[in-house]
Amino acid sequence: MNSRILQSGTKKSLLSNDKKCYICGSPYNLHKHHIFYGTANRRQSERYGCWVYLCYFHHNGSDAGVHFSKPVDERLKQRCQAAFEEQVGSRSDFISIFGRNYL
Image (cartoon, rainbow, N blue to C red):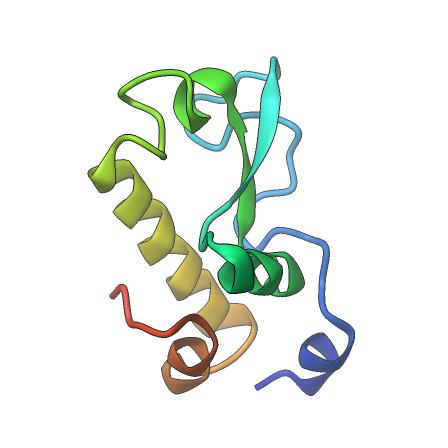
């Protein structure tokens, strides 16, 4: 595992730091979505860069939003885990931090 990232944490997203919706590309009404949510996982998401910008519609403003669409939520989790494994650590590292494998 990349010890520099583990020790200092990261504020950059593993998936995209562009100020636009990760799903549709809209630059309007953006929300920061922590891909692995819940109290402990939200902190870990922030620490390891497991977040993206989403517009209101794709965050929690419609049935297509990540908080209401299990397929959208699962896809984001899978993409983020793959990015974590490429950029941060191993699959076992990921599972020890976030509690399960999404791939």
